[in-house]
Length: 510
Ligand SMILES: Nc1ncnc2c1ncn2[C@@H]1O[C@H](COP(=O)(O)OP(=O)(O)OP(=O)(O)O)[C@@H](O)[C@H]1O
Ligand SMILES: [Mg+2]
Image 1 (cartoon, rainbow, N blue to C red):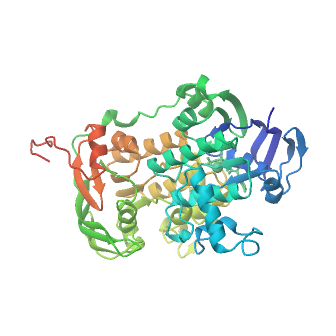
Image 2 (image 1 turned 180 degrees about the horizontal axis):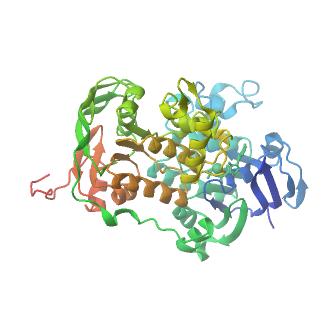
């Protein structure tokens, strides 16, 4: 029997067909992965099931009964709950208050103490380690996600939909999440998780439905598929992710970016980047490897002008000592921020407006003093073509684009300024293999053009694949800077703060 059946679902947004005659079914007690590239229509399909969007055509059956899901309340009544790509908790409230928000139990029947007890009981049952009295604003995203899931469990949802749950998690948190999902499955919960990551599908799902361009391509038993066949179904062609370093250069040009004695404080006023000095030369990618939370965020923010620092950022001889995004751009620095929603884009602005953000005053967009609509339109169209931004429209608001396409808008803007220095902070996070391939290729092209690139990522393999040198960061300091051919295990160990005991390139003990 199918617990849920979605038949021939079609959903359009204006001219964009997000779902085209899609079929999807869910069995009781299974973990079902929904795999697809950015913009394939995964979130749309699940939002229809959760009552957030009306479908244009199609039918939904729950336990063999045709249902009308008009809003989220209907969905919750049917036992369907969803955790979104972007969490929806209230930061100023405690864990317990968030979990019970809007529920009758809160305040009426049970007091705070009893509610806390209920939270702890439920959390313990599924291996969620949360503290009911903590304020959400102080909790890492991994914990916030657990709270979102607990919210669903308290509302008695038996069908749990998680939209890209691992995109924001550290590897450790990912393990914890899948451990909890397995426990839930054992209790006969049915789980749908959206992802682009092949290994998550292969290791943690029972079945997988692949979507491409708004269509459901196939539903398969996970133990009968290979990574290659899945990737091919998802992208519609062969994918090559090890394009990276065949042409790794060994000679570089002059120093374009020089960082001297940089120190940066966190929001909690702790020194999280400690007196860092390094430089990047023409045609070089310096990768920063490290476990999330070792100062990468603050380093990135300082280098992009949105966080105060002491020390000096020097771009081709021009020294910058105070934080100013404008100055950095003027000196030829472009960046790809870590959080595209918050720092990268203005979601309610159009693609066109976002593409020229920060360059409005440039000559190429003005007729003497006024902005020239035509020039902007033409430039945007060129960029949309060059960066394969889909759908190829200049006037859509950027929040209606999928994550991968939003990232391409940022990339297009950053690179079209023809910068000397590029700061790329988690540029492929949350993207599908097709988009990852695209972004890596573009960065390598920029290297070839002689740009100096700082590449921050928590994916060690990616850092190793793209970088010419790798700086391993731990608690705000570089443990060492090593060659990209260094043993993965050794770098992994350095990421925990331990220095390697091997010889450095020049034969010195590191
Ligand atoms: N609210 C909306 N308004 C207009 N267009 C939308 C809206 N939501 C989605 N779309 C469009 O529908 C298509 C499918 O988007 P959807 O968000 O479902 O993709 P996705 O598979 O979840 O992608 P991602 O992996 O990037 O999250 C995209 O082309 C997107 O631009
Ligand atoms: Mg999505």
